[in-house]
Length: 289
Length: 323
Ligand SMILES: Nc1ncnc2c1ncn2[C@@H]1O[C@H](COP(=O)(O)OP(=O)(O)OP(=O)(O)O)[C@@H](O)[C@H]1O
Ligand SMILES: [Mg+2]
Image 1 (cartoon, rainbow over the protein chains, first blue to last red):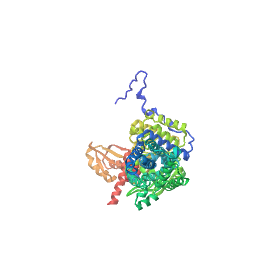
Image 2 (image 1 turned 90 degrees about the vertical axis):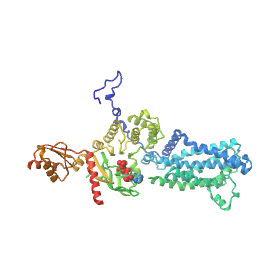
Image 3 (image 1 turned 180 degrees about the vertical axis):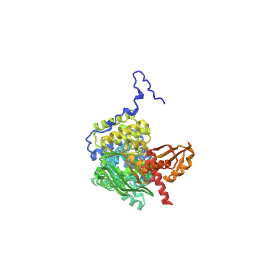
Image 4 (image 1 turned 135 degrees about the vertical axis):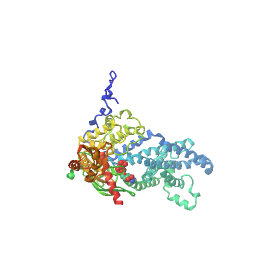
């Protein structure tokens, strides 16, 4: 190695006297005082929601599930079951579309758990946890991002249904009310998956659990078939299944026959799910690792 | 002995078990405020576990820790308001860019829109990351991530900064940058608790050092004290007449109760680990007993030698326990 200074080319900086370390002014790493006050609950949650949106922009492929699943299900159920159960796909679509909407959005909730689980493994949450912020903010913010995913899934099912010939009796207001109720319920239901995302070790395990939970809940309801054809024990399950209430209300909203009581049931079920699973999620979050 | 209020970290009897592994076994630690404190120990000694407990990420099974006067278990919010942690592995959002990472964190510590943006830019410039700012972090090299991770810890200047192996995997220029940064923070009054595998780093930055092994502190003091205490230097003796080698070897071994090794050069001996006073006596003893010494030197131990001597001592004693 030579220690003699290399003559610098005309006009250029003398690289031998400018090591990389000298470019850096150590004093500039210091922040100005005073330190800002920590953000409030809303501000912290919104920052995490913004983070969720940035992530959707950087990795748009994570939206594939909320795009593909609703489209495939709507087409499949309409033409597969429609012909077999109701004689014509078109007649069945009037009955089926609200159920498909519920199923597509509820299936999207499992990715809340899968994404949280993957996110938690990445160490960036260690940093969030050493900040003085409202502790639920990362999860609440992520749910705001998820709400957008659920809206997208709803819009796809609704739009495709209209294309295929579905006509809501309740018109646009009925359709929007139905979507709003489904998204509210899905957000409440997401707390189940945030809890699973925290306590279950791998994303794969969450997926298999989700299938075991979500398929019976959505299929063993009045979403796709009239429960009268079911055996008694199954009918008993359908009656207590919260998804049945959601489907009934959604269908009524779309048909334009919804009652305040039906809306109340969905809101009450959502509140109950949140009241149980949000605190459990937060406890698991505090004790995570 | 320091008054408790002058301590940035005061931990007593910290114990943490992971399944059958006892990661911390009654660890005591007192870090004076306003200093750079080094935390040394072999792999698996419990350094990261200690830092995670002090940064409120883990709860100890037993023992207490106060950080800047606040209990880490009962008052985690008060602790979090004044600390920052740069973990052993980068804590960044891989899918996002550096600017996005820093802006999110700047907001989360309370900066609003424009101020958050400005602070992010300031740090990117300070750490020479401006060129790669708008590429997702997952496309970055390991050393660049380390630097961004450190930048992320400095969005507000903490009163206490935990650095877990800050310079592992950095090139020499980047390491100097990290050292400059630590020095600048310390000059501005931040207490820094850093773990490291590089003893020259501890020697250079830290005013006090704790050596830990198997979840306990096995030695503590200034770098100078540790070197003097372990006395793990080498005594080299060159005899006036090479023929007396064996005689001198026997006399030294008897006197110092340490193994004496003949060097390759005839009449040259070395002994590892005598304390300075004993070494002086040994040289005098040879002279008095008709074995003239032509030259001798007592090499001061490097911190590496101190470290190896300390951890080896622990291993010996645990072997004795097992026997
Ligand atoms: N989450 C965990 N689960 C199980 N064991 C753990 C966990 N974290 C640490 N350990 C164990 O605790 C012990 C101490 O680990 P720690 O990470 O604190 O060591 P360290 O001193 O930081 O080591 P290194 O120099 O390799 O970083 C090790 O035996 C390790 O295997
Ligand atoms: Mg470690």
